[in-house]
Length: 65
Ligand SMILES: [Zn+2]
Image (cartoon, rainbow, N blue to C red; front, side, top):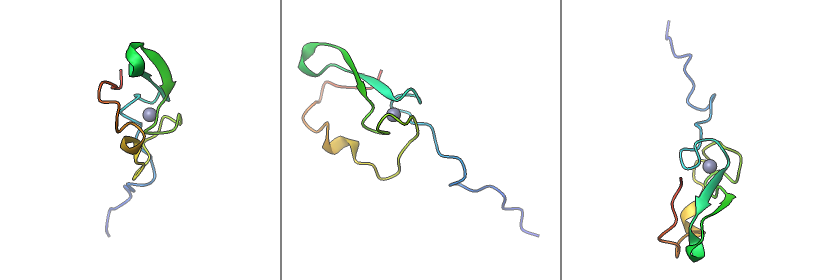
């Protein structure tokens, strides 16, 4: 009688970087502008294993807003 109906993979986590909006504000270049969220590729859902940092490696002043 195992009550294990909770499936971790049944409901994907919302992307925390963009809070599910699919876009984030980047300050690359000194000007704030909206870009497609690299963490979820605009889908608004957290992608396990998605290496967003590889794309933003040199943008240390960018952050999700
Ligand atoms: Zn996102």
